[in-house]
Length: 342
Image (cartoon, rainbow, N blue to C red; front, side):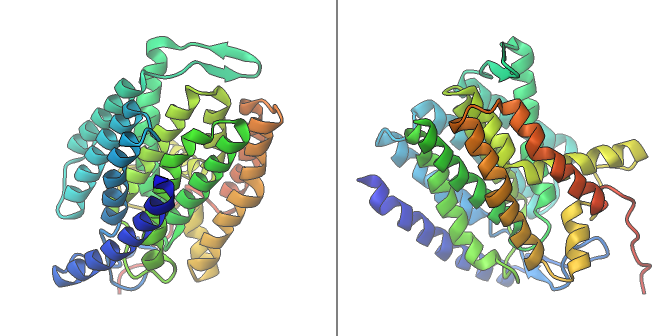
């Protein structure tokens, strides 16, 4: 069966391609140089997330041909992820104006929604809502926010990779428990692509993901969640719960900076995870805590939603309240004090 050989091959391919990208980045001086707003202190090559992109996108036609992933999902994932990765790759190697980046992002989101058939009816607190065109617009905004928040949260070693692994493996388990095991192929293959890269990105990182990889992961996870919602509305809530650490930190930080009047498009290091890593003095403890929050808090709530009938919206509230408390405790969005140069 295709699963038997594709899974290890994807992981090995991603592992080897990341090594090649690292050598290329070093040779071409594609290096992330630390500055006052960085969360790292050592110059490190970037752009390794391209390995995740190539490994996953190369697998999609095989999954479609084998009938393991529907072709509309192949088109949605491949087109949107590929476009976001190209925009991110170009930005990694130069600079693209924010308006053109956003145009590419919204185009990718619209492409995905077209192939998925729009936004599925939403179920919350016992009521079902068919939002029509408003839902489709909100779904595109959701995808654009997912890819950008994933970029924002990719600021310390291993955190974005660990979040993706936990979400993909967690979603696959929930699919199986809910009787939708056929949906597991895409997230499992994505997890293997991320796993190969994580070998090089685990603290202390030897290469960074870059915008191409982080944006690709964000929109791909978002598309997977919207695809699953057509099979069961509870699965969308489950995905939002599994991705809660990133969603809460990024969204809380954004709103706090907006209320203060900050230029939110400028680089900063005021996310909760960044404050936590500075307090710990290392990246590894924070990355491991994120993994623990996913496995021992968010995943069990997801199980309650898909297996034991807990209302998805209520489950999300239960999941997010402690995360919001952590965001407050770790000063998410507070005005950072950058030490003067020299």
